[in-house]
Image 1 (cartoon, rainbow, N blue to C red):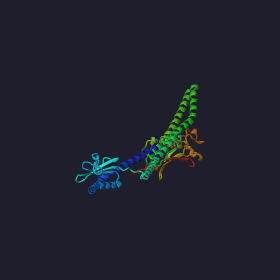
Image 2: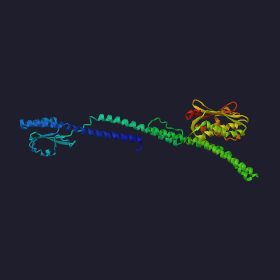
Image 3: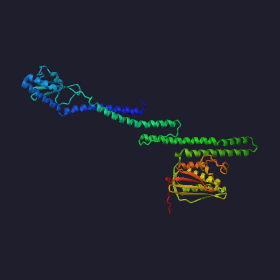
Image 4: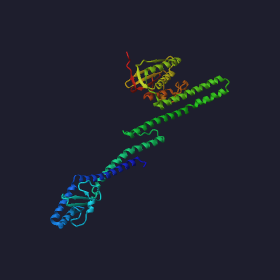
Length: 442
């Protein structure tokens, strides 16, 4: 049998039948033994012996015959009154063979089925009363309706048990088959609290993890196939220039530049994939978010000065959180560097961190041309560039904000942008559930 449903049903029903047979056998044994243990059979035989003796001694063989005929009409089996040697006082036959196999009165029965012979002696040892009895048949017919009712009730309970166990397992098997066939969105969504529910939820977690990894891998392959065409074409052209150009140093410099761009592109793609595709691989540690923001500002000040702008960071209260330090640093740095790219000379990039009721929010604002309202949700998509000043001419690959959004998403936070008139404000929000404000020591 390959079906859990069939196995449970069959084994449960077999257990029920065996239990019923054992119950009947034990009932018969206990009832028979209790009757002898209480002495009811022995007292009946003694009474029969006294009555038969009285009939024989007072009326002889004729009265004894009348007594025996009357008793046999009411009591099943054969009975004999003999003398001490085993001679039948009614017929004169020798009953010593029955005496040899008879069970003494008051002993435990040796036979529960077939014929049983019991002997009783008179007090003066002159008479023997031999009772040859057949065990009464077990009349199951009268009890069959009750046994059938019990069987039906227990069978129903067994069926419900098998249904309760086998049905969710079959559903889980169908879900696994659909997931294996490519339906990555299928889930069990079990609400059971037992081991089957735990197994279903474990599968859901595994399926979610695999779906995330496969989606990230597919996105990576799509992004790479789309974005590597132009760099590879330029790299091929630069390699041809190295072979044919008069100024080989310039051609080699161009080749190195294209190789550097290609390396940066591949590195950024891998970073995006790790940020979204493997959240569990993120290393958790306790860190000061305000200190991390200060480090990012210091690292970006040199680039800001080179572009003729400045970074103004508003002081914030100490904030402690648990998270991946490198992912958070890259997310904040990518947003800040993106703002530096589009801030005009002489302007500033404003950075502020505020703790609200249920989150900590970092705001980064530039004073550039801003983004069209319909393009605001798209700037976090991979390789998206806005026409005009925010295009590939600035040197970006369209992955900075994508990396930031996915890195913050690993921490269950969110990143969004809105126009600030002038400029663009990008907000990073981390839930307060993972953040704890530190009371500044005086």
